[in-house]
Length: 447
Ligand code: URA
Image 1 (cartoon, rainbow, N blue to C red):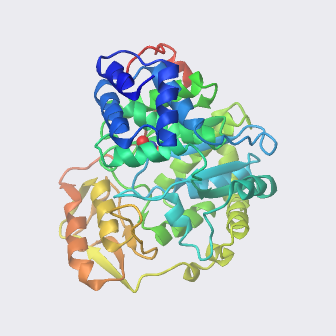
Image 2 (spheres, protein in one colour):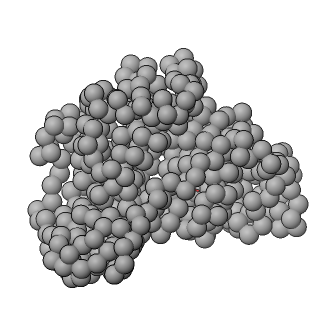
Image 3 (cartoon, protein in one colour):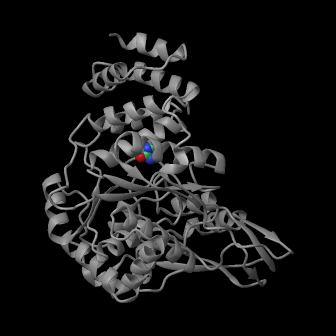
């Protein structure tokens, strides 16, 4: 078999066999197939798509390119969630302790933020001392002992995806549904998950800008999970405006802790309850989604969820005082309030522009490896649909470099659209994709 023939097969719109996909991924992982051939292959997939069967074979080939964790000795059903990324998305920080508090142990490997979207690891690292570099042995041991673990992606798991993702990033081949779906699910399978809840974000601050693409991605992930003998239920959730009110690492930890204590912004709390409920159903804690939601809600209200968060922070060397004392988290030197130049109804708070402003302040990174400032960020004072009077507070900007204040303020003002007429609040979810919704999609369907 030769890599060039496999690329040509794809370019001629022929379906690749499992053998060809395994050969390509194996050769690429070992370095026998060079980056230029892998880039040509990825571009052919991006332009011509893949069938569900090919996408499943690619997923399994990437999962099998490294170790596959077996968590069965510590968790009866390993359930995980995955957000496709957005602005203000601190859901993992709340959902994982909540689900663990309901008796379902959860093990998660998360990523860092890149561009305008934030990453769970960066948020957790704003807690002094918190370690995100656990070894696989530590990961499994903590899951058994604490029932909750949250660490960085281990490069022994799905190494093919790590290599391919880095190549896609610089060859304009990120925006391909089969490549995104196989990338996400291969990492979940490698990290030992038997069931997962993909949270597919859609809107101005998401990878998927429209509902049709988001639904196709969600259906693809659910279908390939099924074809790989795993289970998945995907949610389609709004990312037109930031989730919750805080954007920036320490600010988001603070908001997550408030939510874990039974408070927090209504939209964020609702988002967490829905995701937690689907995880509890997939982990067979109950068969009824409403009952699952009640279980999650009582864990938030009676202190069990925040106790689990405390246990997580302690187990990974973090300063647990951050749960009760905001002063333990990094704070910016300056907090400036941006007031409204208009009176009117907020029609849009462009999530990507708010995310880009947070990056400008130093909360995110333009390119891999850039340092970030955990203290800086933005607190929204309003959501879409709110009426705002002239002079009301719109944003609180947490800043360490005063020179950035005027450009950050200008970007935030540009992120807003106004209306004289009342505006409906944005929906939080646009739908749920379950396995039965994909039953008419055959394995030869091309995506
Ligand atoms: N997240 C991933 O893990 N992979 C992709 O391809 C896109 C988003």
